[in-house]
Image 1 (cartoon, rainbow, N blue to C red):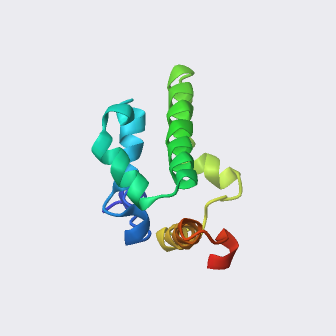
Image 2 (image 1 turned 90 degrees about the horizontal axis):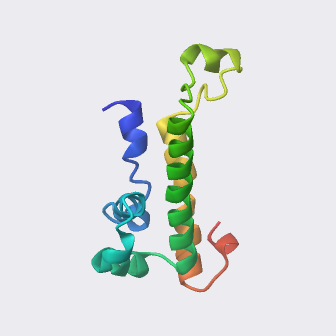
Length: 122
């Protein structure tokens, strides 16, 4: 599996992503079908707090907007050479690093669902 596929398929925490609910929600937001998918909405409400649903939705919407702008303006993607000239800004960042960072969101969300502070989960 390519590094990109691994990043796109992160299963940071089974409870947090719960079988791909986040990915399904992001796709529904992207395709503008979220409003008509009651089963998916019920799954999201069961798994996530209102604040988490807002954050997941905003993340999907933001990337949709960025992609549309980049497509509209024929934006060239960064090349390996460009990254090298920028001081290898992502050099040394591994899939494990990304997963470790993402795993921090699950405890914070769980604490919020229990009515506690996100800081209490740390």
